[in-house]
Length: 155
Image (cartoon, rainbow, N blue to C red; front, side, top):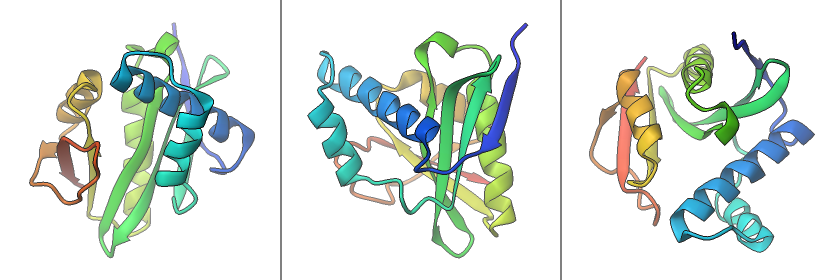
C-alpha cells in the first residue's frame, strides 16, 4: 500500500529545487519530444520563477520526495496554482489529489475564494486530474505562450 505525506517546504530548499527541475525537464521533454537540456531548464526557471510562491508543498511517497505544488496570490481572493508535479514513477497512486487538497486548504487560509491555473494540451493527465477535482475550464486569464487551457475552482 502506498502512503503520501504532504508537508510545507521552502521553495528554495534542496527537495523543492530538485523536484521543480525534474518537473520542468519532464514538461520540456514532452513539449519538444526529446530530452530537455539543463540550459532549457534554467531558462524556464528564469522565465517563470517560483520565488513569489506564498506556499510550497512536497509530497513524499513511502518516505521519498515524489511530488510538489505551490501557489501565489494574484489578487485578493484569487490564488494561482503552480508547479503541480508527480514524479513519473509515482503517478496513478493518489499523489496529485493529495497535493491538490493541500494547496487548496493553504490557499483558503491565505484568503483565497478561488484558485486558477493554466496548462498545455499535451498534459492530458493533469487536465483530467483538475476536472475530476472540480476545476472548470474558463476564458484565458493570461497570455503565457505555453498556456492552452485555463482552469478555475471555487474554494
